[in-house]
Length: 78
Image (cartoon, rainbow, N blue to C red; front, side, top):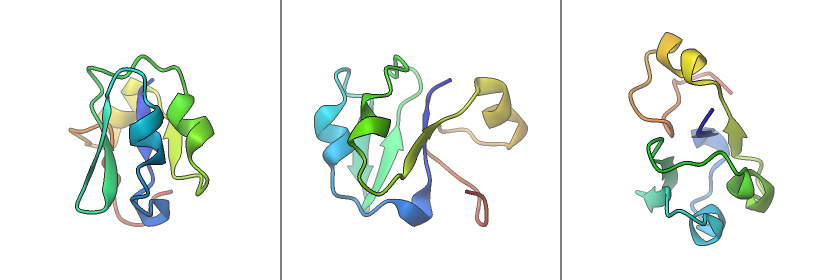
């Protein structure tokens, strides 16, 4: 289960990006994005996020939500 960004909580502070040991996280347009192919599920980003904007999500849940990117969320979901 790769990390998932809760867009409405992300402030774009780059803490997760700096702490990710595999470089799976980039901040674009002020919001973190996770490359699921690089995410090793270590949860370092979740622990480093002071806003609680990162969580872990099962890959099956991600597909069911229609997401094509691990960091994307649908409006209204948390």
